[in-house]
Image (cartoon, rainbow, N blue to C red; front, top):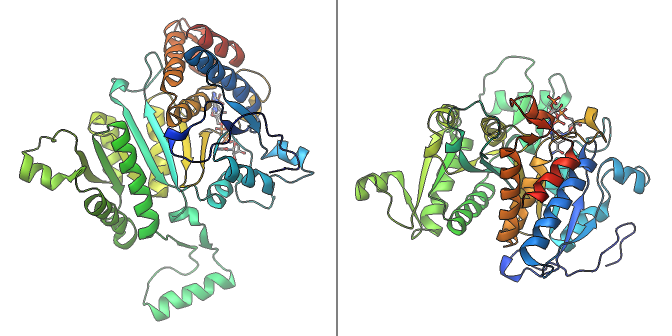
Length: 412
Ligand code: NAP
């Protein structure tokens, strides 16, 4: 496939998201990102490459293929922030990793990130949240936090169906809701529509259960506000339970079964499916984090929970993420472009670096993933950190992004 500006490197094409078919020299697409993107992508690629080299002695190697979005794309593609061939390259090469992107004010896109997710149908936003020894945390026992959030990425408020107060569209829908359906609400209300479907919910839950089976996770908590929003959040809860019961009856059990049949003790090899109301879950995250393993959430709940939970283990500066569909996987830093730090070589590359660890794990390159984690843990134990951690750690040595990467590589 010939592209206009994308240069395809020597390497092998990934032809399936089935990890058993991962080539030794896979072509992986990367989007550098805006603002601090260049600094963190440069540092992270050095770290990932060093880990792969060290783990496999040259037998495996990633062939990096740069693709473009955001400000760099606008330079390369004459003002186009999201060129069509970026989507095409991801569809062709299946796996990518990206830095943060600025959403151009007044541009054609609501958000480049949301556009990528919607166009490529990356329906699950997966965020593992765990603590690493030495990372500053507001928790007394941050080591108890080890969870993975599966957040729905395409529905709910992200569907973007909203009608501004005072517009003809709003008046039309207001009239319909009041006159046809008997709804009551104040005059001049802005109106938003929150669609949550069985299709969208079930594919999310399915991917979470598969992940739990592959990774030996013990429970899945369905987060919802179904006591109030019965036909959206409540239905989400119901559909999640249905997937577990109908498609994974041998692998999963519900909380009722756990107590009725097993006296509260989880049988070996089973995954417990439970549900928790959205508001209380925030309290549980702080007071009883060890009770949670995987959490499945609709879009907005998952959005809030992801950042709150990240704060418990060191903040969004180190929280990794991936947007996953049936055809394409896009791993990404979860923070923004932090424009005031652009090209200063000072920020923490942790979020992108750990997104790359997720990617290595997905590829089945577990030894390389472990080397990055070990290098990071040792570097932190030496109190060698970037500015954000240095301001929270007594006796820390503050280093630049590039120096931090060098230290991690040296500690592998
Ligand atoms: P932000 O870029 O995440 O930055 C907010 C603050 O978080 C920074 O000022 C910095 O805190 C801290 N921070 C972020 N990344 C860090 C890192 N790697 N290391 C250390 N500290 C880090 O959020 P924002 O300022 O609200 O958004 C800026 C732009 O990013 C906007 O254009 C927004 O649209 C975009 N954005 C993109 C994504 C994405 O691409 N996924 C996500 C969110 C926002 P201190 O000032 O305390 O040092």
